[in-house]
Length: 180
Image (cartoon, rainbow, N blue to C red; front, side):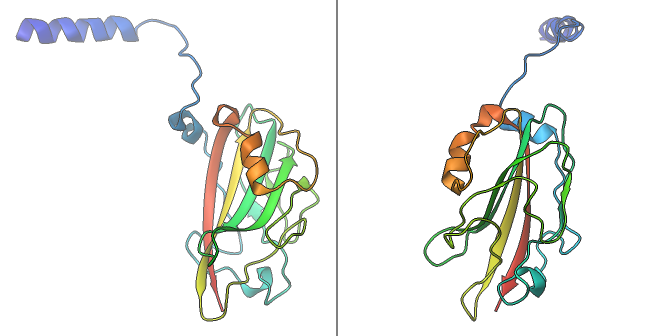
């Protein structure tokens, strides 16, 4: 048994000593290897979204920032409410964001191409849950190795179809909550 263990250990050392670069993979492990570190000055993970960024306030998008990983050709962003009574409600679809952009200022939407949200409008539509409820709002940003080539007004579904897993360099999420 000791001889077998020693043989396995020796083979492992030989295999690890090769100077070959491993092939690039597209598994979820490689997607999480490059961290985007999505954050907002307005709220932290799991915290309340300030009224300013909702339908009860100025209804402007919150400031967001992230780190752009190497090999990014385009960034894309979705804001969704998974707690909506009739299924996930899309509040913002933004794509075609240049890899030179590492943040969005409050109320900013001119840095990319706006898609159509569930309000039937282009651009950001803030949290607006039914009275008496508290919902989660998931901000997701993707770094893509290829451009989506989507025309203005694409839906969240069209964006997802345009960025298969083989193009995703990294992704990150930030979840805020809001209740009325």
